[in-house]
Length: 215
Image 1 (cartoon, one colour):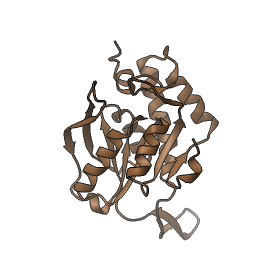
Image 2 (cartoon, rainbow, N blue to C red):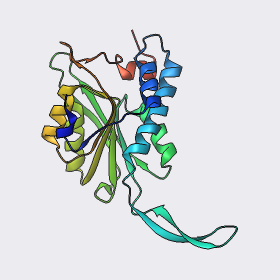
Image 3 (spheres, helix red, strand yellow):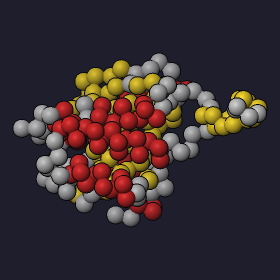
Image 4 (cartoon, rainbow, N blue to C red):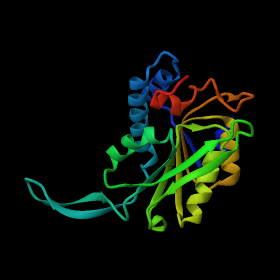
């Protein structure tokens, strides 16, 4: 898949990130390690996704002298995990920005149609004034991501971003078609979706592996 034609898509390319995603892919990785590595990946991806935050010079005093130094300016951020798997990424992101607000969107996938359905939504009241980062480990068909962004827009969000750990080409294409101007940060781009709409080679069901509910 040629991502160069999608200026809003960033595929990260760091050896440590690749290493950690490979740990997630391994079916022998247990719940405790899986959860810890998801948090570490979220920190790494968040660091990259937040690199364009605006800054302003404020005066402080070091032990040596007074000086003006850059601080992040404007309203604090908002991270919105798509439940439930997205919860695994929140701790990593809030460790980068402890002042960020956190909203929640609950979507589940119909096992027959593979389409997402909303069951929960709780968001900060002032989304229109915030940079909103939606997070979900997987971007498979793109349906959940698109529905989440649409819902956020209905609640007033104007500055949207999406961060995922792995993505399928089908999901990226659907996302870009629906939201060509929303920045999309990807940790790894996988080969394809299978007949059950699971990412291949993938890492299984991220929510089950984060919360230890694997059958």
